[in-house]
Length: 521
Image (cartoon, rainbow, N blue to C red; front, top):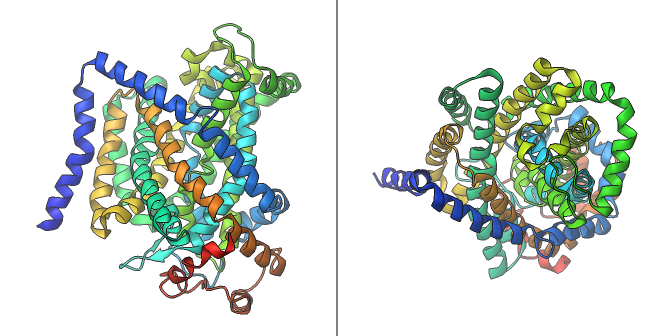
């Protein structure tokens, strides 16, 4: 009875505000939206989160001596070809952890987000998305490393890790506890924004525009499919994402390559404009209002992190569940996620938009800009269909990945009992997102992303000494990531590292050692 009361209060807490906001007069919604825009502008402004994101990524790149460039191909081989490790504790394989994280990041941001950045910031915004991705790979490695390094096991024996754990265990005293709780609350909110409402709404709009499917039908179908997968937990999510995430990315990239092949003569000019506009701004043309350098920078970084989530700490939650023999190995695998998302998928979307010239349509056409670019390249029928189907798969996979992120943080905040209620509420909100027009949700998602990133970035800077020290030691021992589990275990013993692959609970291996971390800073 006690758990039922808690469950009912949780439903009221989440669903009540959504319903109330939906019933509020449109004028009040507009006023509320303007206030949110101001908050969003400050958080993602040139004097707050943008320098912190880029600065942290650059700092970690230097401290890890360009690890994302030196070990990229080794990481890609280990994550995509070797795939699985023997001898490591965890709930899912390394490959499933990678595809789960990819499922959460390769979403609407790769299609609509890129178009939004270009429609407001001009072609130069794509350059800053690349920069965010490249330095963000160091941030992604670091947070995934810490996620595994300080992971724990819950009372049911399931692995739990991420910023909500490593910020508290890794940073001694009240600061670590504060940062961990800050992240936990922001992550729960974000899971219903970036990971749910925006994605479900994009699916419903895409199916309605292309196939004239009623949003209520889309909402019901998504409600059933999402609910069925979530009942199986992270194991089922891992199996589902490992099966269709690679396929969905390949289909989208093949369509993009066809468009670029048909506009091959425009590619050199497009690349030149991307680089020049990044440092000079873009003049007004067509429906495009023009953009200064700072606007290109702001849109590129904001949409870049929305797409690849580097620095937000979210992917560390999936990485923590992976079967691995050492945190460095999973950190490198997780790092490739940002490369695939930004350097490959985002680049494809951006080049298709710039080479076909549809970016000049301006902000009002951002929602259909990518589809318009594909239609211009391979015809109205196939172009629109490829983009719509890609949006459906990308958004669906993002919802699955973020459901796990939000669930783990709900458990952290309320206890294990919150797992099932969270899944049920999350599934219901998918229906709300598909059937309700909430214009401010994208802004709320941006704000929540920023609030997640803030404590995580501070934590990465504080724990950078530990990351650099243990990473350097392990890669000196195993630079090709081919050491056997026995060799890795011997290395851990010889170096007096308290982490053990077969002790995910961290009770004697991880949690007590966390109190000694700050000596490495």
